[in-house]
Image (cartoon, rainbow, N blue to C red):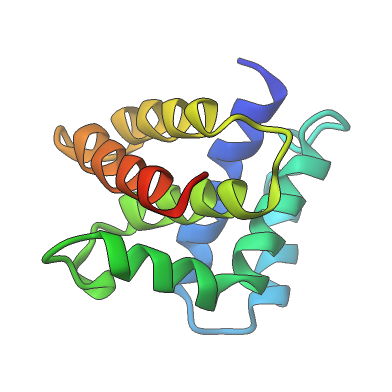
Length: 137
């Protein structure tokens, strides 16, 4: 597995952890990193931190796009895994211009297939493809 894939998967796990606990996100991120320090290698850690901190810092804009393009789905009703995979991808659309949007979508779909439900891949693909097309990413 490449460093970026591992960073995305760990970012998903961290965001899931932060979503489930209402305590201080900074404290919880430190706890997560301490518990996963062997996985957060020099090649993984910078991109991982960019993703997690980027999603947290841009959460309002990210969630606005997610709400706008996920027809008939409230954020609170989405599976937590799918919601956080899409948050990561939307952050990449917004702030990681060096990553082609098709790569971002493909990575999100594959991670969704591995961590989500049997319908996660198609749900994630549909929402992200709509955002890409209509927002011009």
